[in-house]
Amino acid sequence: MPVAKKRETSTTKPHPGHRPEESVRLLIPAARVKQRLKELAKEIRRDFPTEPLHLISVLKGAVFFLTDLARELGGEVSFDFLSVSSYGKGADSTGEVKLIKDLDVSIEGKTVIVVEDILDTGLTLKYLLRFFEEKKPKILRVVVLLDKVERRIADVRADYTGFVIPNEFVVGYGLDFDERYRNLPDVCVLQFASQGSVNSV
Ligand code: IMP
Image (cartoon, rainbow, N blue to C red; front, side, top):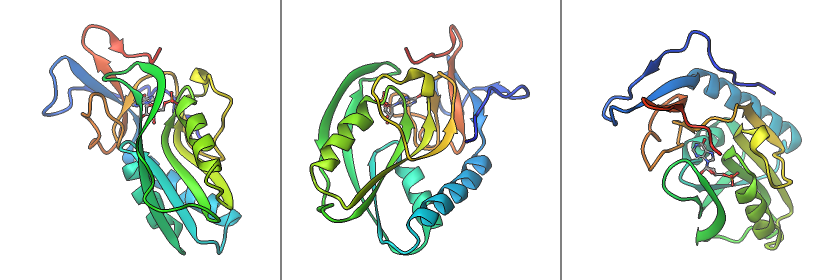
C-alpha cells in the first residue's frame, strides 16, 4: 500500500484567496490520486466483478473521492450520502459522532461499499459500520483514500486503502479546514505561519 511521505522537494505556499497566515505543503499530487483510484477500482472490481455496487459516502469530505471512484469502477453503480459530525470547527477531533442526515434509500440486501475520505481515530467509521450493519446489507466493505494509521483509537480497518499518511492535518481533494480548501486538487498538509503543520492531536 502506498505510503505518502513528506516530500523533500515540496514547497510551502499560500493558497490563493485564503488566509495569509495559512499555507499548504503538497503531500499527494492530484495525478497520483487519480492513478491510485484506478488501482483501487480494479481491486474492488476484482472482488465483485459483476455485482451492482452501492457506494455510500459521508458528506462532504468524500464527495470528490466517491464521484471519481464511481467513474473508474464501471458496471452497475449507485450511490447515496449521509452526513455525520465528528469534528468541531478546526483541526481537533471531539471524538463525538452524531448523525445529521440519514440515507435516502434502503441498503438491505445490497453490496455496499462505504467510501470514506480519511481514517483518523476510526471513531466515525466504527459508528458508521454499526449503523449500516443494523440495516442488513448483503456485503459491507470500506474503502478509504487516506489512513492516518498512528492515530487509531477504535478497532477498525478499511478493506481498501489509498494511501497511508503521517499524523498531520491534511486538506484538499474534498478535505477541509473550517469548510475551506476542499477545492484544492492535491492533498496537502495545512500549515500556519506561527506553528508549522498542525498535528491532529
Ligand atoms: P475519525 O473519526 O477520527 O476517524 O475522523 C474521521 C473524520 O475526521 C474524517 O471523515 C474527516 O472528516 C475528519 N478528519 C480527520 N483527519 C482529518 C484531516 O487531516 N483533515 C481533514 N479532516 C480530517
